[in-house]
Length: 208
Image 1 (cartoon, rainbow, N blue to C red):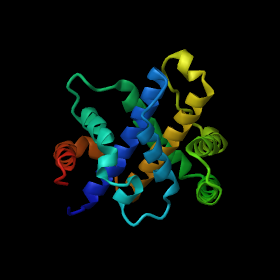
Image 2 (image 1 turned 30 degrees about the vertical axis):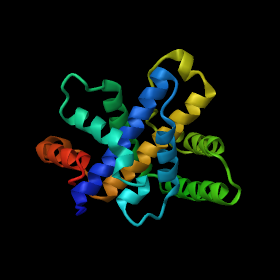
Image 3 (image 1 turned 120 degrees about the vertical axis):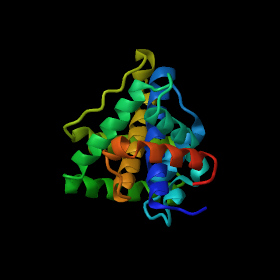
């Protein structure tokens, strides 16, 4: 499969949409699929990938994100406003983060530390999620934008749900950072909508 810059940008955006979908599922249903949590953790801890796909394992691991992105670009009664809001907020949060070099350094250092804990101390995913959620609180929660997660109170008040939400949001931010690094711009949603949509469909079919 030939990988173009647009191909890679869409994979990164799909990761962001997948993160937003996880937040939606956690806040509305109290859970998200375990494989999605595993993909998010691995993406956050893989800081020196050889390719965009390697961050997520492969394109199949962001299939749900590709579908959500397609629904955001061309809604046909399926567009979820909360997911759109989370994506927009993550893009704004990334802009705020990149203006704070000290927070960026802390994020990188702490993620490297968490990766070592996983590899050397055999931390399980529950411990990893705890560490990543705390990292979110220590860094991104200090930025001006506070992402408001809406859902059912009985789930939102549960500590495990809160931790998984924070981990999912940090995963989404990682994907936005990657998208920006690959040349992604907000105006693409307006001026390249048809090209993005066709490329998304090709990716879903394995033709990207």
